[in-house]
Image (cartoon, rainbow, N blue to C red; front, top):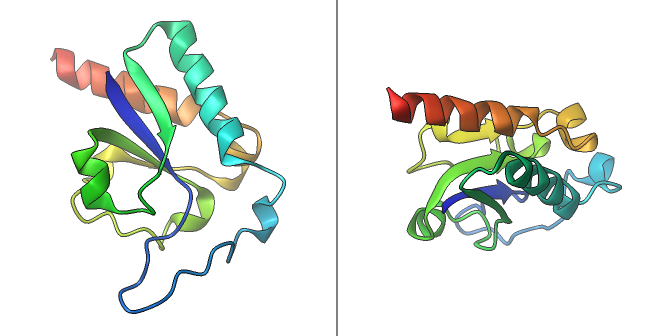
Length: 121
C-alpha cells in the first residue's frame, strides 16, 4: 500500500519553539480530516492501492520517508514554510486555498495518475 501524507504544519526551525496555529486564521473553518476523508473516498472509489494519512511527525521529512511516504500533500500556507529535504518536488503537491477549502481532490488524483503512467512506461 502506497502512502500519501497530508502536511498541515510548518517545519520547525532549528532553535525555535514551534508556534502552532500561526498563519492558519483564514483556514480555521476547514479541518485537515475533511480533506483526508475526501481524498481517501476518491481513492477507494477508483480502487487504487493508496492511503492518505495526516502527518504525525511534525513535518519531519526523514521520519516521513522512514514511514514509507511516497507523496506529500501540503496545505496552502506551507508553500515556503515546509523544508522538503529528501523529497523531490515531483513527490509533492501544494494545494491552493480554493482546492483545500472546497475539498478538491483533483490535484491528488492527477498526481496519482501521473505516477501510475510513469511506473507503467
